[in-house]
Image (cartoon, rainbow, N blue to C red; front, top):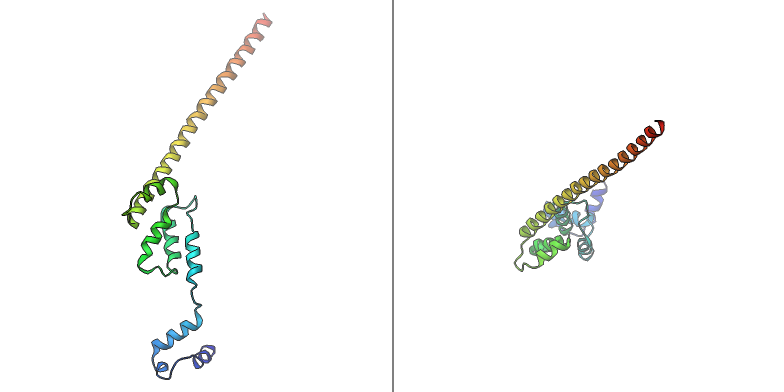
Length: 157
């Protein structure tokens, strides 16, 4: 009933009322709020890749945000430019004047993998250092324990 009332008061001609496409467009215009492109672009430009977010997740978010920005044929360039967050990747990406979105994605993925591998190596090195520190700590404790036992034995004799 409510939709019929809205339909009756739509600002469309009697000819358009005979055309289902025109009716659907008029109803869509009535129900769907107009997109504020300036606001949507502001949200898009403020988007940054979170530290726990993969490059694929970031690209997905940028594509979603860009869909309401009316970038049309510049969409890939704006998404590409939105990827440039990491300092090392940024340096590499801006040095290529013919950078495409796909090439930027590939470079970002390579950097992401390299960063993960460096973190893994750092964790392994820290583990080895911890083991060596503990080894040294146990060695010192053992020497102190031996000296204490020797002292006890010599006192008993």
